[in-house]
Image (cartoon, rainbow, N blue to C red; front, side):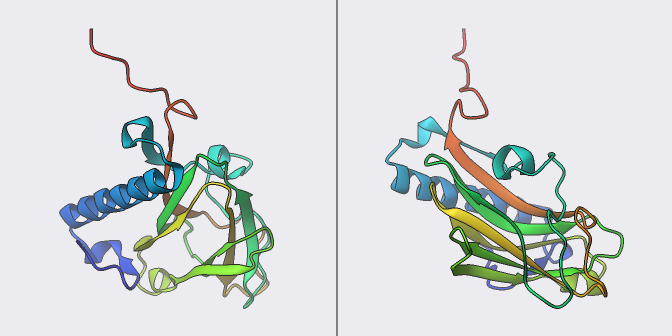
Length: 185
């Protein structure tokens, strides 16, 4: 298993390492969901997170949801998870030509009372890399995810201006979004 104790740029990992890392994160999320929900692993599925479906964005396009203030941690969005949904954030992709959001803070609670983790990803800008990975940040059902960003843009970042995607997996029961597999005939 790869040690993601620091932020790793995509180019620092081979394709095989990325596949292995993602598989390990999925297994960790599934184990977490089984333990917390009491459900059998066969009742649960893991899929990529979708911003509208899972976090109430206004579309399935990843971008900053609120205006970001220069040199200040600024709330971007929050979402209370349904009881049966579990999330693992594990990376950032910034599709913006000249990204200025250089950090993401993952908090818990309706007003972000507790910091779960902070990921500084400004190295992506400096090295002109669009994707980085980090140790998974887990959330369980009924927790409120509260995300803040930090920008270095003079004048801040307008709402929806930076295409910053948070890589995440969702673990939930079959039927919530995706139907259970059909038995072979």
